[in-house]
Length: 458
Image (cartoon, rainbow, N blue to C red):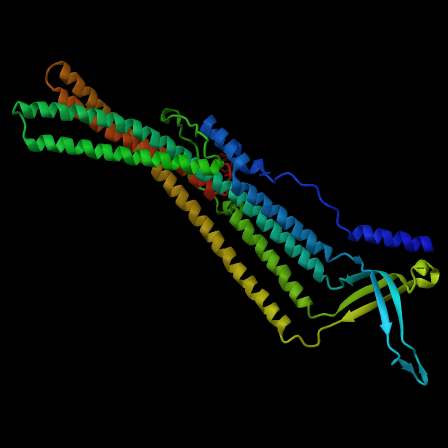
């Protein structure tokens, strides 16, 4: 029996003394499937895919999202611990000094002092008759689901925003190329108009008009440079590397996705992270309401102590020093100042609020999907129109060159036709990139679903 007590005390001490945890490796993003690389590969751009992989490895928002999930996993474990028995060791060593004032009837206890060695193992367990603690654990698990969906939403938002900036950067590069060509053309026009002015073939207003246009084109180039540099800096933040060179394809390598459906079922919103978050939130608060109701019921706690209690160290492990006690402690609040009633009403109001948010999320999801479809259709139509206009303007430019060959048009006529062609070319570039970006917006609105797979399901 003595050995049993000693082993029990040592085990309890080992349980209570925390071990020093090893330094763990930094938490990184851990859901490569959320990147949905199979979708991004449809753009046939290896640089885009490689940049997204760098974003997965380095982005701090993705790392923090992973940390939030792990934090909530531990919160679930903390709550689950409340469903388990609690065992602890709380030893005491104290010197008891009593005065002679202590008296039992006619017998007076003289003054004395002695040590007291007290080593109890205390165990308690709340019998979860009403399932209150289980409901609280279920609530925490739903909170974990909310955080997991928030992590997926972070992936969808970051990849979509990065891809949009990537194609905007390609547009900025192409705009700069066109702008430089426009400036070069306008410089030639201004030089030829100056020659005409010097020979008296045009007015000073004609010359100043061409020179003003040249300065306007140069100002516009500065804006394109600013846009390009701003996009590069923004993308470096995504990649968490201020020295990283953003590798990208040229404009001619950009392809348009075709075959994307023009209609979707409203059930698509059920895949959106915000919808799944609201759904989990309703379940979470539903568990909270049930738990709040059961707080009015009595609680039953089983408790017990086993250990050693002695006045001399050499008798600490004797059988006479062994102690044991056990019992059941029922408890119920007879008056709590209305706290429990207020808490229950609070949870009911939160549940109603969650239902409203759930309905609004459905409407918002449908609205964003419809808006994405409208934007996608408009962008595609605009690109087709600008492509046709570019072909016609190119024909005009070619005709001006042919007419110059036969002497019925001047060099200025050709330069003006070229300048008009370059202006339309900018519209064509802008509309093509807008069309690409509209597919990204549609992908984001659909909750990161491969749009072609949705088309197959329809």
